[in-house]
Image 1 (cartoon, rainbow, N blue to C red):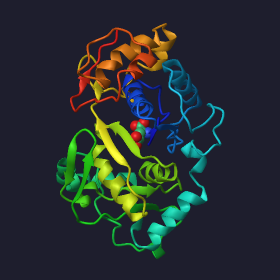
Image 2 (cartoon, rainbow, N blue to C red):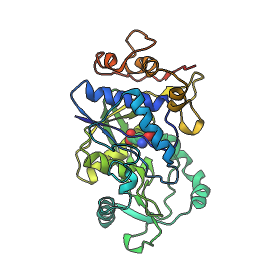
Image 3 (cartoon, protein in one colour):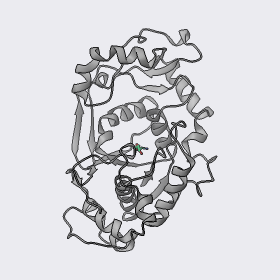
Image 4 (cartoon, rainbow, N blue to C red):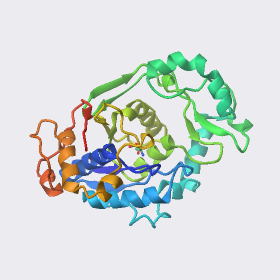
Length: 313
Ligand code: GLU
């Protein structure tokens, strides 16, 4: 068994990220599994070195180690930094394979054109509960018509999808088409998250993808992509999300309390672990502080399905 910690260094990590890392790490370590650290920095415009440096310090502070991954923030050329593989043959080969089979189409719609078309897709968007969908403008274009700066989008078939979630049971989507036409390669040549995540999970032998429930609709897409690429899909588990004390969603972009500020403010890692113990084992007694090795002794985490507000003064 192999899980991965997959931080995106587009901001300082918050308690929700720590909760996810702990869950993945404990899942593996309580069952003799391996842990991979992969830095998901495909969006090089949002990546900042200080975020990368800080995430390594956060992991060390929490006591989380890994079996495969970078040696540190200065190891940025290694394959566990997605940015170092962005334009490599591996991803290009996969794009060429999918484009050659007609699974992708080239798209030259601008952001402005897409936002003007948005009202037409609002209904489908509501149904799927996911981000802005594609209005279909370039869907009829063939691979041979592609310009050098076109994006490549995936053609999704009209067919139902389902998978068994580790904690939530069977998840069904009436049609994959409800996910729009996700971009797999951007116009600037960068590989998009959806493709990188599937190729890397397969290449790195990840057997268990454990992540927040906000990504659940996209798992139908990832499962479909694994199928197109002939990979066995990993097991997927979507855990509840941690909210702020006022019920708001934790987000790097919303300025949620960062692990860095707790760490630099002198908060002990054991007290962060104590707060997060409720998320990992909702049925266990509440503790104020707990060392990592003791938490390991509590056994396989079972976060359930209910979102949890987390106060941290
Ligand atoms: N890098 C993503 C994030 O930080 C995680 C993606 C995943 O687990 O598939 O939200």
